[in-house]
Length: 272
Image: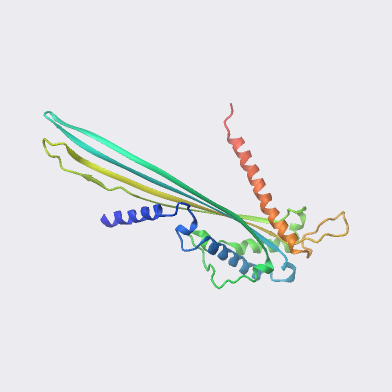
């Protein structure tokens, strides 16, 4: 029992001991920079596997990282006092508590061409999935980039017109860690004396880490002289064009996601 209390207490202390600004670094050895590097190295392996030809040299990949960390710390205590009387005993219970919450949100975007990605130093990289804290391990980019290349090779992506056309995939991982400790003491009654009869302390803490990674992949488009056909996916063009299309893909995805949330809230709103 004593070991269980010590273990729970250690977990609670670890959660409380995190920085005032909750960040992924608090729970794992990887910093935000290292997490990004591992994901880019995973993308590099997939690019070398599926898109090593010159056609994809100027293709681009844009990443949107969003880390949301929520910490809840709750502490309370109670004590019971016994008052002796000639005809029995009267008990008085008192209690107090305090709840705290800290939220940290980190959001940023990165964009690069496949050629630039191939130059990344990947001497240290993720080698397997981390099911306890997924964002620090392999996240499944082999399938994402492989699907993008296969769709492009079949010319299916050419049907998407406009400068914002790109292939977008969103991955989200959530990890919940929680712990509590509740030691209590009860004292044997002593006659004819006002005294503490019982005491209790309750401490609990939990932390929710939600990691969102949105990827947008695009192959550059070459402007054709024929104004009736302004663009054709798959034609080798400039890397700037691919970058713009990839970034526009992220913004387009965010816009439609926001619109969907608004529609869902209107649908679920009670009728008056």
